[in-house]
Length: 183
View 1 (cartoon, rainbow, N blue to C red):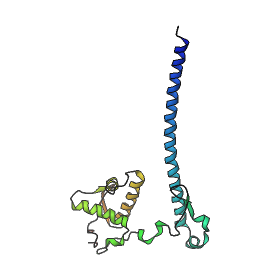
View 2: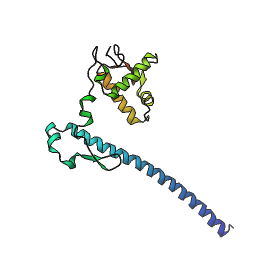
View 3: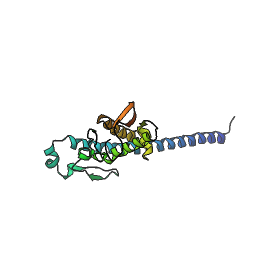
View 4: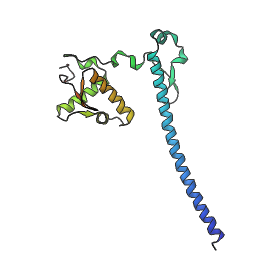
């Protein structure tokens, strides 16, 4: 017959293991909660900006009071929302490419994409994926960053600056060359 002390030691060992497992689970849940909270704040900011872009022009300029123009900032504090949303600024628009159009007509982000693809093309390395672009720009290769680059690259394809010879692989369009000029 096993001793009472031996049985108690066995139960204590099982209880310690259970406590350790629960602590690990709690740490994992805390980490997931922090990520979800950050994502929620980003969505709240994005929703606010989309609302501003889609609002009628006179409402955006005149109809909002100060409380309507604040959104949670990355640190969780309320921050001022720009009266002119980023998406509506003229510099973020991509003009249709035509012979002689300089790269300076594009915002810095689009010029950066064109530079990377042109350099790669000059080295004879072929088309580039958005994951490769993100890595070459020193960005975290996470879905949000890659999708933002893909959106910009697709916009450049639609406007004639880039070609997409295979799905998800981009290269400068025929006739588009260095940053000084469009041909």
